[in-house]
Structure formats: C-alpha cells, structure tokens
Figure (cartoon, helix red, strand yellow):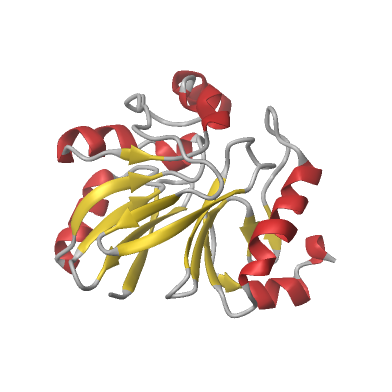
Length: 212
C-alpha cells in the first residue's frame, strides 16, 4: 500500500483540494473539496481513482462548498471536521455573505464528526486525526504515517500560520496546536496546506517567523 496525492487548487480562493488515494486499491478521498467539482471528478477519473469519501479539515466555505454535491452525486460519506465547527457548517448561507462567496453552495452535513486520536481509512491506508483548533475551534489535520504526509488545512502554511480573526478563532490555541500536534510529527514530514505550496515540518520549524 502506498499513498499518492494530487493537489488541485479550486475556486478564486485557490484552495488546495487534495485527491489522496491508495495505490493498491485505487480508491481515495477528496480532502477539502472547496468547489469546481467537475474538475475534481475529472482529476479522479484521469488517475483511475474511485472516490470513496470526502474528508474535511474545517468548516469554512472555501473548503467545503463542493462537499454537498459530491456526496450526493457520488453517494459517498463526509467525515470531519471536529464537531466544534458545526456552527460554521450549519450557517453556510451566512458564510456566503461573510466571505463574499459567489453562488449558493449546497448544504452539507458530515456523516461522522472526528475527534483527536480517531483514524479514517482511505482504501487500505489509515490516516490519523489531529485536533488543531485556533483558526477554527473544530479544525483537524490528517496524517498518513507511512508516507510521512500531513494534510493541515489552514493551520500551518509555508512561512505563515492560519488567520485568527474569525469568530471563535484563538491565536494562542493555534500556536499551541502546531507545537503540540504538528511539530512532533517529525522534520521529515511533508505537509499540504489549504492554500499555497507544500513545505516540511523541519523547514517551518527553522524558518517560520510565527514559530520562533
């Protein structure tokens, strides 16, 4: 079994949706499908991947707007984020105004809320769930220990960290989550953020000004 990943930036927000799959079974998941659902399904078809579920790191509209139609059309479950982000997901129409989002995204309700220490399956792979609040209270990250890859949403970026100017954001909790749950994963771990380029834990530990 081996993890493969293609990152597909979607919508004008250029949010990184990850198509992650198990090479042995060619089944996978879409992590944070923020929109442009036809591009996402086309990417899966191009790689020969059967999408079996949707994984969400948090409830902001640019990460979840495509989850509703994908779940409905493909008949697949939605897992994540942590239940503390229910207030974001339950008020998707208000997020349209809050973020200046174009269109009216379809409502989505997770089939499974995730807690720290949970695991999720993608084909024959197992991803570990890390609760990393601060950007939002229910933000989680997914870590695949064999490939040494983490999907961190809007917690940590190359050279930066997530915004904390939203309702129920907490800057101290954000830094604490990074130091407690992400940095200990190891300097060799590659992480895929919600926006922008990938980086490694080691590079950010040494150079990220927010972690000094």
